[in-house]
Image (cartoon, rainbow, N blue to C red):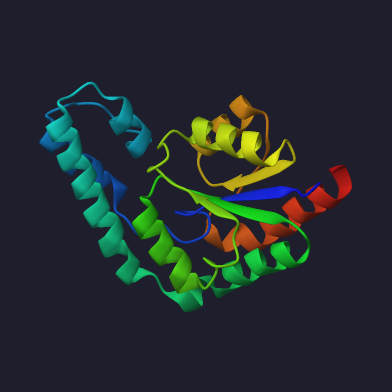
Length: 189
């Protein structure tokens, strides 16, 4: 059986390129809510507001995500792309999870040169709820899963779904986390 390495995008694979505080404020104004909107995609998905307002909020988020790609310095994350390739060479299946849309996630992964070698990209278009994303991955690929993320929400979701979790303090730590995940996969599975 193949071990599945699950990697988050923003803050894990690449630096956070979206000003989420500013974005949350814009979304709050559109929706006329005081909700903390943390995590943003999941909170927006669960909010009980008019669908037309939600669509406008998603449009604003999509625009911010798309615009953020222009700030991605591929040379700054080259080691992360190499780490993904090494994991695949070691026999791991790599799946990307993100609350980005598929279209913006695809652009990020194309810029890194890894889109064509990863197994799947699970985005908010499937569901913006991280627990549900991880459940889907476990159901599809089996229990041999190691998830690398950067937020307390990622860690909570991993615990909730009972998958191995490695937390990175920032995207520069991804190569070491991938090495650790590869060891976990080779030793435990």
